[in-house]
Structure formats: C-alpha cells, structure tokens
Length: 102
Image (cartoon, rainbow, N blue to C red; front, side):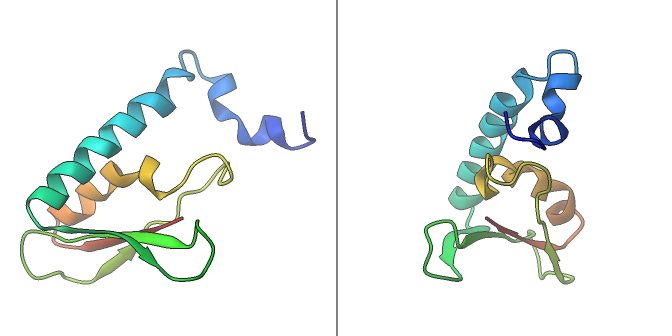
C-alpha cells in the first residue's frame, strides 16, 4: 500500500462501500446508452494524444444554458469519465451541457 492509498480509498471507510463503484459504473453505462440513443451525447472526444486524454459531452434536451465541466475527484488513477456519466443528469435536466474529461 502506498502512503496515501488510505486517504483515497473512501469506500474502505463506508459500510458496503465496495458495492458503490460497480453500481455507479452500471448506472453510468445505462445513462450513456440512453443519451447516445436520443442524440444528446458525444463520447470519446480526444483533447490530447494519450489514451486517457478524452472527454464525453452530454447535452440537455434544448439549447444549453452554458457548460459545466465535471472533473471527478478522489482516486483519479482508478476511475475515469465513464464511471461518472450519470452524474451529468442533474445538470442536463436543468438545461446545462456537461463535459466530463478523463
């Protein structure tokens, strides 16, 4: 274990925390599928040359009020943008576009 691993492993300190990442990944996958099907998602847009230098963009149903950049925190080396897609729903429901970079 690295010196800061415990600080980045919140799930070790929450009862049932091990179940959250899998549940979030499934919720995120379902959200992406729906948003792609209705034409409100642009996935895997490169912003650099590294494999992880990509972002997903989610649009609201109408004209966007603006753009929210969702930068996931925590243990960034373990997760990427695809684990959090469903978190865009709150903003898109309020009329905002959401960009999620890895």
